[in-house]
Length: 318
Image (cartoon, rainbow, N blue to C red):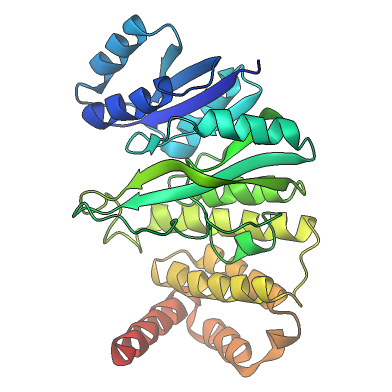
């Protein structure tokens, strides 16, 4: 039987970690290993990890200085020994037959490199939609081009053959989208399980809420977006495809936000990528006007003006 490695990065989530780990130990499939990466926790999480590792031989634990989820997952990936790789956030849980059904599916379909299934979403008030979350209920054969429109599954849904477990960037924002775009660029085919495989939870107010224009987070998003664009191009996605046109708008929006956040070089880079991704539309008046504005008053000032305008339009549309 093939080993399944589960990577669980954690930062200050002792109680939630226990439930996440329990959902892996409850899998009907064996053999498994669980790698817990403590990302510099400052509460009682290290003690809980040590206790779990003593109680369960399947668990290995490592600790690092706080570097964010991308760096933590990469540290775990480097020591994973499995034939298949599962990513699990410390606040989510897996369904008991997830590994069994997905390993079985991948073994039956050697042409596929990733298996995904239905994701259940549990909101803060306890409500659970009856339909699978995002697009996890749809049968989609390849990750590109749809992955350009959005990351249409959540972190615990897919199970990867280890050969498609590409390195993680040390980012705190959108590292998961960049990772999946990198996997998508390898032309991987997907296997779908028409059953619940995991549950993701909404809780708290979100540690990143209200911080959308912080320079460090914007810089991470800019890096991720630029890499996603590169992955799409390497996969042969053209600017004639609607998904690339959609991503061009994402790039242009983030370019404006980076300018507003004081990141002139990132703003300029993303703007140029947006023009390239827009293809024949790259000469339209909106691009020409913004380029002229940035040359006149600078990328940061142009971003601030554009972001103010974006907010006004959004308020009027409500």
